[in-house]
Image 1 (cartoon, rainbow, N blue to C red):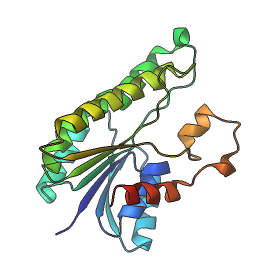
Image 2: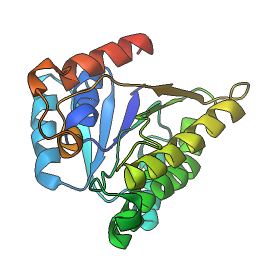
Image 3: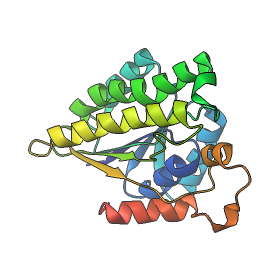
Image 4: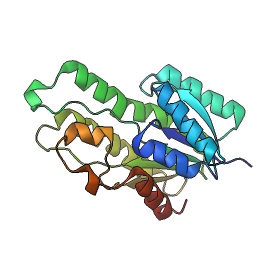
Length: 213
């Protein structure tokens, strides 16, 4: 039976690397807003002999996510693995100067979409599936107010779900990736030496090995 891996935030960085690493053993449902990047991912997956379904959607749109999950249910009836890497990085700013639009987008993507997706994906995972979330603890650090607070909310949701499903499933894992030269990190640390950071491909392989996937 085909194993289904749902990757939210799959167009680049760790999400794309996870999609490529999982593709040989899974059919990948790749979700992101950037169609061109998803098509490039699809080409790389096909080069490795894998297959993917591209879903150019905004995870912060509940109607789009409902349509996505209904489509997965109708086609495969399940999700074996969900990796949630979708995130919005608000510009660094003192707390008193956080732009309202940046805050709203952070809250919608980092917290709101996570709550919506847990509700929609949980029935597809059932008791035997697995969900993976990715921690990046910036809460309370200076200038990280918008990102740090909403990322912390995301992780609080994930940890609650993990505690609630210990005896019933699905399995919920939270991992802390090593620093990688991603577009998100470049917004936060534009002057650092990117050559010393872990490659997304290597980090994806490490994480999947740790999770025994």
